[in-house]
Length: 201
Figure 1 (tube, rainbow, N blue to C red):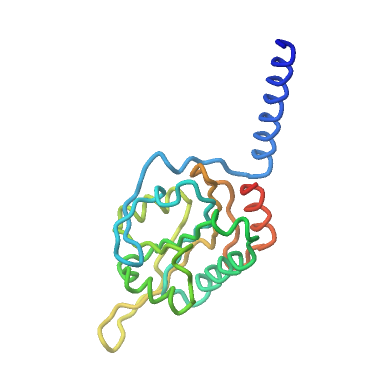
Figure 2: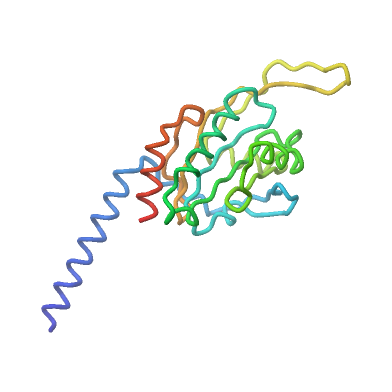
Protein backbone atom coordinates (compact mmCIF):
# COMPACT_ATOMS: atom_id res chain seq x y z
CA UNK A 1 0.00 0.00 0.00
CA UNK A 2 2.89 2.32 0.82
CA UNK A 3 4.33 1.78 -2.66
CA UNK A 4 1.04 2.83 -4.27
CA UNK A 5 0.96 5.96 -2.12
CA UNK A 6 4.51 6.86 -3.11
CA UNK A 7 3.71 6.21 -6.78
CA UNK A 8 0.59 8.38 -6.62
CA UNK A 9 2.48 11.17 -4.86
CA UNK A 10 5.29 10.97 -7.41
CA UNK A 11 2.87 11.16 -10.35
CA UNK A 12 1.04 14.09 -8.75
CA UNK A 13 4.29 16.03 -8.29
CA UNK A 14 5.30 15.36 -11.90
CA UNK A 15 1.89 16.51 -13.15
CA UNK A 16 2.00 19.65 -11.02
CA UNK A 17 5.50 20.54 -12.19
CA UNK A 18 4.58 19.98 -15.83
CA UNK A 19 1.52 22.20 -15.42
CA UNK A 20 3.48 24.99 -13.79
CA UNK A 21 6.30 24.80 -16.31
CA UNK A 22 3.81 24.72 -19.19
CA UNK A 23 1.97 27.72 -17.80
CA UNK A 24 5.22 29.62 -17.36
CA UNK A 25 6.33 28.80 -20.91
CA UNK A 26 2.99 29.84 -22.42
CA UNK A 27 2.79 33.24 -20.77
CA UNK A 28 5.61 35.80 -20.88
CA UNK A 29 4.61 37.49 -17.60
CA UNK A 30 3.94 36.41 -14.03
CA UNK A 31 3.46 39.61 -12.03
CA UNK A 32 1.48 39.57 -8.78
CA UNK A 33 -1.00 42.48 -8.83
CA UNK A 34 -2.61 41.72 -5.47
CA UNK A 35 0.05 43.05 -3.12
CA UNK A 36 -1.57 46.49 -3.09
CA UNK A 37 -5.15 47.63 -3.62
CA UNK A 38 -6.17 50.85 -5.37
CA UNK A 39 -9.41 52.74 -4.84
CA UNK A 40 -11.65 53.65 -7.78
CA UNK A 41 -15.27 54.46 -8.52
CA UNK A 42 -17.14 52.28 -10.99
CA UNK A 43 -19.61 53.48 -13.63
CA UNK A 44 -22.32 53.66 -10.95
CA UNK A 45 -20.14 55.83 -8.66
CA UNK A 46 -19.66 52.93 -6.23
CA UNK A 47 -16.27 52.86 -4.51
CA UNK A 48 -14.35 49.65 -5.27
CA UNK A 49 -10.90 48.20 -4.73
CA UNK A 50 -8.78 47.01 -7.63
CA UNK A 51 -7.75 44.23 -8.12
CA UNK A 52 -10.06 42.91 -5.38
CA UNK A 53 -13.05 43.28 -7.73
CA UNK A 54 -11.56 40.73 -10.16
CA UNK A 55 -10.83 38.08 -7.52
CA UNK A 56 -11.15 34.53 -8.92
CA UNK A 57 -11.88 35.83 -12.44
CA UNK A 58 -9.88 35.66 -15.65
CA UNK A 59 -9.71 39.33 -16.61
CA UNK A 60 -9.07 41.36 -19.72
CA UNK A 61 -8.11 44.90 -18.83
CA UNK A 62 -7.46 48.05 -20.84
CA UNK A 63 -6.56 51.57 -19.79
CA UNK A 64 -8.21 54.12 -22.09
CA UNK A 65 -9.74 57.58 -22.18
CA UNK A 66 -13.16 58.35 -23.60
CA UNK A 67 -12.08 61.36 -25.69
CA UNK A 68 -9.72 59.14 -27.69
CA UNK A 69 -10.48 59.46 -31.43
CA UNK A 70 -9.10 56.12 -32.58
CA UNK A 71 -7.11 53.58 -30.53
CA UNK A 72 -9.30 53.37 -27.42
CA UNK A 73 -12.60 52.69 -29.24
CA UNK A 74 -10.82 50.00 -31.29
CA UNK A 75 -9.34 48.43 -28.16
CA UNK A 76 -12.71 48.43 -26.40
CA UNK A 77 -14.37 46.93 -29.46
CA UNK A 78 -11.77 44.15 -29.61
CA UNK A 79 -12.55 43.28 -26.00
CA UNK A 80 -16.25 43.12 -26.91
CA UNK A 81 -15.44 40.81 -29.81
CA UNK A 82 -13.57 38.52 -27.43
CA UNK A 83 -16.59 38.50 -25.12
CA UNK A 84 -18.90 37.60 -28.02
CA UNK A 85 -16.68 34.68 -29.03
CA UNK A 86 -16.20 33.17 -25.58
CA UNK A 87 -17.21 29.55 -25.19
CA UNK A 88 -20.32 29.08 -23.06
CA UNK A 89 -18.38 27.36 -20.27
CA UNK A 90 -16.07 30.41 -19.99
CA UNK A 91 -18.60 33.24 -20.04
CA UNK A 92 -19.04 33.35 -16.24
CA UNK A 93 -15.31 33.00 -15.63
CA UNK A 94 -14.18 36.11 -17.50
CA UNK A 95 -14.41 39.77 -16.49
CA UNK A 96 -13.69 42.86 -18.58
CA UNK A 97 -12.28 45.98 -16.93
CA UNK A 98 -11.62 49.43 -18.35
CA UNK A 99 -9.71 52.01 -16.30
CA UNK A 100 -9.46 55.62 -17.46
CA UNK A 101 -6.07 57.32 -17.31
CA UNK A 102 -7.88 60.65 -17.82
CA UNK A 103 -10.00 60.70 -14.63
CA UNK A 104 -10.42 64.48 -14.59
CA UNK A 105 -12.65 64.23 -17.66
CA UNK A 106 -13.74 60.60 -17.37
CA UNK A 107 -16.07 60.74 -14.40
CA UNK A 108 -18.20 57.66 -13.59
CA UNK A 109 -21.11 59.33 -15.42
CA UNK A 110 -19.00 59.83 -18.57
CA UNK A 111 -17.73 56.24 -18.42
CA UNK A 112 -21.26 54.90 -18.11
CA UNK A 113 -22.39 56.85 -21.17
CA UNK A 114 -19.31 55.63 -23.05
CA UNK A 115 -20.32 52.06 -22.21
CA UNK A 116 -24.03 52.46 -22.93
CA UNK A 117 -23.36 53.83 -26.42
CA UNK A 118 -21.41 50.64 -27.11
CA UNK A 119 -24.02 48.30 -25.57
CA UNK A 120 -21.52 47.10 -22.99
CA UNK A 121 -22.91 44.53 -20.58
CA UNK A 122 -22.34 45.63 -16.97
CA UNK A 123 -22.83 42.06 -15.74
CA UNK A 124 -19.38 41.25 -17.08
CA UNK A 125 -17.83 44.72 -17.51
CA UNK A 126 -16.63 47.30 -15.00
CA UNK A 127 -15.40 50.78 -15.91
CA UNK A 128 -13.30 52.62 -13.35
CA UNK A 129 -12.26 56.18 -12.62
CA UNK A 130 -10.07 57.30 -9.71
CA UNK A 131 -7.95 60.12 -8.40
CA UNK A 132 -4.56 60.94 -9.92
CA UNK A 133 -2.56 58.98 -7.35
CA UNK A 134 -4.45 55.70 -7.68
CA UNK A 135 -4.54 56.05 -11.45
CA UNK A 136 -0.79 56.62 -11.68
CA UNK A 137 -0.07 53.65 -9.40
CA UNK A 138 -2.11 51.30 -11.60
CA UNK A 139 -0.53 52.74 -14.75
CA UNK A 140 2.86 51.94 -13.25
CA UNK A 141 1.78 48.37 -12.45
CA UNK A 142 0.76 47.78 -16.04
CA UNK A 143 3.54 49.81 -17.67
CA UNK A 144 1.10 52.26 -19.26
CA UNK A 145 2.40 55.60 -20.54
CA UNK A 146 0.04 58.51 -21.25
CA UNK A 147 1.27 61.94 -22.34
CA UNK A 148 -1.13 64.82 -23.10
CA UNK A 149 -0.59 66.17 -26.63
CA UNK A 150 -1.40 69.65 -27.95
CA UNK A 151 -4.19 71.31 -25.99
CA UNK A 152 -6.56 74.18 -26.72
CA UNK A 153 -9.63 75.88 -25.26
CA UNK A 154 -12.84 75.65 -27.25
CA UNK A 155 -15.45 78.40 -27.68
CA UNK A 156 -17.02 77.44 -24.33
CA UNK A 157 -13.71 77.80 -22.50
CA UNK A 158 -13.29 74.03 -22.01
CA UNK A 159 -9.78 72.63 -22.23
CA UNK A 160 -9.52 69.99 -24.95
CA UNK A 161 -6.58 67.69 -25.56
CA UNK A 162 -5.67 64.30 -26.91
CA UNK A 163 -3.35 61.83 -25.20
CA UNK A 164 -0.50 59.85 -26.71
CA UNK A 165 -0.61 56.53 -24.86
CA UNK A 166 0.29 52.86 -24.69
CA UNK A 167 -1.97 50.68 -26.83
CA UNK A 168 -2.61 47.58 -24.73
CA UNK A 169 -4.96 44.87 -23.50
CA UNK A 170 -3.72 42.91 -20.49
CA UNK A 171 -4.63 39.37 -19.41
CA UNK A 172 -4.85 38.65 -15.67
CA UNK A 173 -5.36 35.15 -14.30
CA UNK A 174 -7.65 33.98 -11.48
CA UNK A 175 -4.89 34.50 -8.91
CA UNK A 176 -4.56 38.17 -9.78
CA UNK A 177 -1.34 37.73 -11.75
CA UNK A 178 -0.59 39.64 -14.95
CA UNK A 179 0.17 36.98 -17.56
CA UNK A 180 0.26 38.64 -20.97
CA UNK A 181 -0.08 41.91 -22.88
CA UNK A 182 -1.49 42.37 -26.37
CA UNK A 183 -1.57 45.28 -28.81
CA UNK A 184 -5.03 46.62 -27.97
CA UNK A 185 -6.22 48.19 -31.22
CA UNK A 186 -4.95 45.38 -33.48
CA UNK A 187 -5.07 42.48 -31.03
CA UNK A 188 -4.94 38.92 -32.29
CA UNK A 189 -8.32 37.81 -30.97
CA UNK A 190 -7.67 34.14 -31.63
CA UNK A 191 -4.56 34.30 -29.45
CA UNK A 192 -6.44 36.02 -26.62
CA UNK A 193 -9.25 33.47 -26.80
CA UNK A 194 -6.78 30.59 -26.72
CA UNK A 195 -5.01 32.10 -23.71
CA UNK A 196 -8.32 32.55 -21.88
CA UNK A 197 -9.30 28.98 -22.73
CA UNK A 198 -5.97 27.73 -21.35
CA UNK A 199 -6.50 29.56 -18.05
CA UNK A 200 -10.12 28.47 -17.85
CA UNK A 201 -9.48 24.75 -18.18
